[in-house]
Image 1 (tube, rainbow, N blue to C red):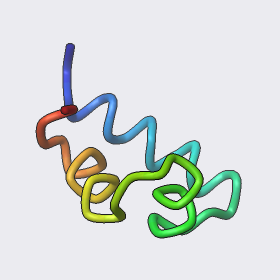
Image 2 (image 1 turned 90 degrees about the horizontal axis):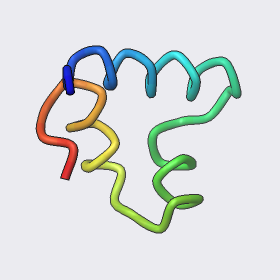
Image 3 (image 1 turned 30 degrees about the vertical axis):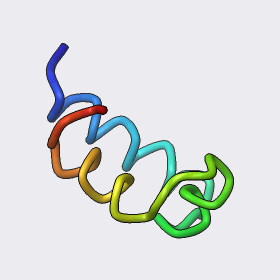
Length: 45
C-alpha cells in the first residue's frame, strides 16, 4: 500500500467535507496527530 497516496486521499476527502484534522480525529476517536501523520504519508498504524 502506498502511504503517500492514502494520505493524499484522506486529506482530499477531509477537506471536501470541510473537516479539520481535529474534527476528523474526534469523529474517529483518535488523536489529531495520527491524522496528521497519515496525511504526511507516515505509517498507517
